[in-house]
Figure 1: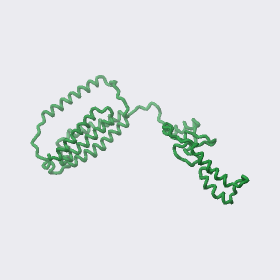
Figure 2: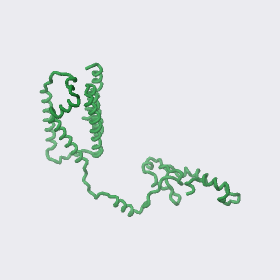
Figure 3: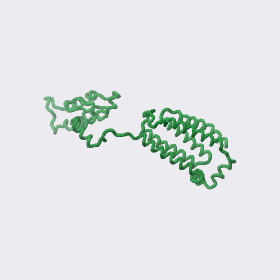
Figure 4: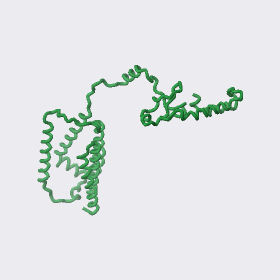
Amino acid sequence: MTGAETVLFWVLAPVTVLGALGLLFASKAVHAAMATALVMITLGVFYIAQQAEFVGVIQIFVYSGAVMMLFLFVVMLVGVDASDSHVETLPGQRLFAYLFGLVFAAVIVVSLVGVDYPETIGLAAIQEEGSVTALAREIFERQVFGFEVLGILLVIAVMGAMVLAHHERLTPPVTQRSRSAAKIRSGQWLAGKPNPGVYARHNAADTPALLPDGTPTQESVPRVLIARDQVASYQDYAATTDAAFGAVEAESDPHGEPVSETSPGAQHAPDQLGEGDRR
């Protein structure tokens, strides 16, 4: 191990351990997923530093990317605020889980104690036929049983996620036809709610629309803006509207009669009113 690899190890090893501890002790599933992604990324860096570029890239892209995104997708389906039920649906399942965990831990400890590490031969000898070929030979020849067991565990995990995300429907599904019928029976806004904007000159979402009688309607403004108290008053635009009508009245003759369509002043009146005021 060179000096650069030693520095890389002592820098990333504590980060990896902290990420693993975060996975174990995180109270929220999203935080546990992010800690797992951190561990997988640092492991990928370790693989790349040990000249196992293919394994390192697969570790980062596949596990940190695809697998963790799948985990987060399942968390969104189940709900981050979903509380675990402490009621035992099967009698004795909690005791069986504790016993199974203790037996599994004992088997792991015994297996690690009895491991006989052979003499190292170096990465060059291991990857003599290529890193991809060596990895495939290791997975599908020497470790084929463990690989199949891991595949079974992944399938069980997917089935468990489906069970957790499934909810029994107690009411008939709401269809588009039933929504339309309910809207007709309500008798409110059958032709749709008015679009935001005053006199069709200010079409911002925070500006309430005006009904035919001149009163503003809050139904045209999104509920989020109403909750944030960010709704503009239609009175703010009254000055500009009055100024536009005042310009028209100023171009009329002194006797108070409106300007004819052939007079020079009438040619400028529509431009000053604007499209919204003509409506």
